[in-house]
Length: 302
Image 1 (cartoon, rainbow, N blue to C red):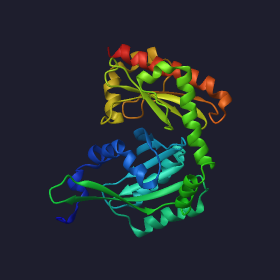
Image 2: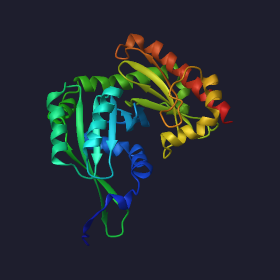
Image 3: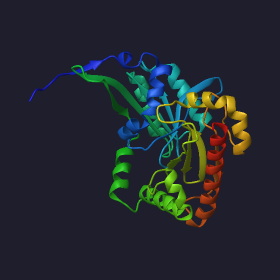
Image 4: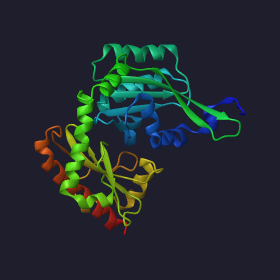
């Protein structure tokens, strides 16, 4: 058996430009980041305005918590640390993931300090990204977790070992919620709604010009939003929608975040989804709004 050498490449050989190459790649590969820190991440938006600054990536985890991802195609600096704190306050995020090619010791100390001195619902991660290659193979990204909450591994293991724990109950409730949805609207299975424990579902038709209508469930809300196909960034989706934004809004009804470089059009309803007594109201709203979005985008781009 031939054993090859693993070569370390410069991150710039894989992504030449941070905003144009690296950030879009991260958005499309949130599953890789999630695997490293054991979270399921769903994209919420890119370049979200917070005062005069713009947060690189905003996502949600399987519990509906807002996740801020700040990325640098270089070593960390004080400017980005300050921006992270600004975004944390402005977006009310609970999880922060700082990704860079190298971390200064003082910045790792700052992340560790935040994990030790903030409330338990906050979590801060430092992920160092590298690029490797075996001979002439396709380069591969490698993430190394340099800092995380002290109790994170223990909490994850406890959730796995104890199926009656809070996390296991939440995951179980998600699957039961979507099972209830399909019992009420079985026809939506043909559009893509599945019986699983995911926090979100996607539906589409051949007439929607590649747009997908996502349905999501968190602990305290259900919602819908419009997104593009896999491989298309939020900004690209918005640019395609922009010429028809007014027409879409008129047909879809209430929707927010129609800015070209902000988030996807979305709508949500506050409801305690952990209480099954509220599921009928929640799925009725979800089904109605999802199909209103789907009808609107299909009509606008027919």
